[in-house]
Length: 177
Length: 177
Length: 177
Image (cartoon, rainbow over all chains, first blue to last red):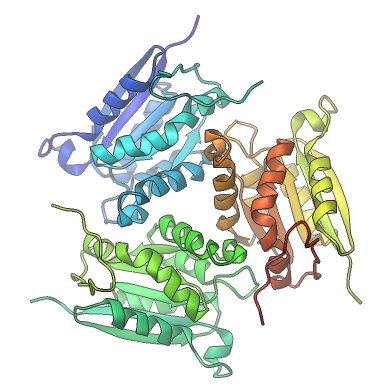
């Protein structure tokens, strides 16, 4: 029996966590996932403030207790004092995957010169892939379009459930055996 | 009242610091700044040897005491034994900005295959953005042309003074409110 | 008298080290070197398991005792639990050269979307340049085609022997004096 995949969706924002601001990033990620994934999955949502310890503890809980194969964060990747999502991600990961950040910045550079200010990264903790996404909903879809084709095979490699993607949307790349 | 911006310009070179070699990198940076910045600013210049502690202390002084919003270094970013500017930069920064080094290497790769030997990076310490530039004057302008459009908004995000750029030269990118 | 260059070629693979699998990566690297290098060199080969301490000790021995100017590894750069070649490389290097990994991922992205899963890096330990290559023989040549033009000059900068490349294959870039 194919195990259902759990995906963590974490909005990191002081204002959204206090309810001063509607969370648009989390719903944008959920909409994207429902469009591209054809296999069974559930999502676990969190909306938290830009506090490094809190982000680390949330990621650890989603990895170690909720057994999320994939965790997508939105927000907290800029140069400002309260932007610490990449630092929290690096602190909890066992392996960093620099190719994700490099490609997301390249994709965003086609749109805006300030893409280089984004410090998005990705990494693996045990059997969970964590990917930082930008805060802006429009930029979330652009970045996911850049990297999502590599995500199903990455989850295979860390022994997670098999993700089937909607091939009318795009084809997940897996090498031929 | 708009506060005047202070910009640190640091030449890192054993030979230039001993006077055996004319510093060409520092003046190239100053010429570039005068061409692209239209708002008020002053520069604080340093010429120091390739000594990691000295580079770290100089960067800390320019950030913490001279309150430079932007510090541009030239030299010391290659693979040779005495090239330690990136290590010193990383040691004093609170946040690393990998997008700067990635884009500067991409820009330089259009010119020379050895661009990948450049270890230039950038980061933020409190309210200061530190960017490593190459040692060669011609390469300095090429790299700044690649990344400068993102610098004014980065300084906004770390609560520095508002920089106005010369729009006949190029337009600083700031997102619409 | 021109000193002969020693080049380390390290296959990192649990299965190849146990003889369950023919090592194809090491021979692919040796074939590439014989095609592009015209000056005298010898190679020192190792086939080891995906054990981080063993990889670190092997790299240290090749740098410090075998005086390899260049060490090329193949394998162990993915996201899986046993893939730790980049971590071992970083642990033994004094300087990291992020431009190599960035460019190799860019080159591989032209072929496969999963290139961003490769965590290949490069760095310098004393007078040795260490470069991680992928495990697949075809990808090895693609990645070396991307970065090899910068390798002879890098070895010059870390005071290694002068490498002459086969100019009908490609031209090693060295800046004009």
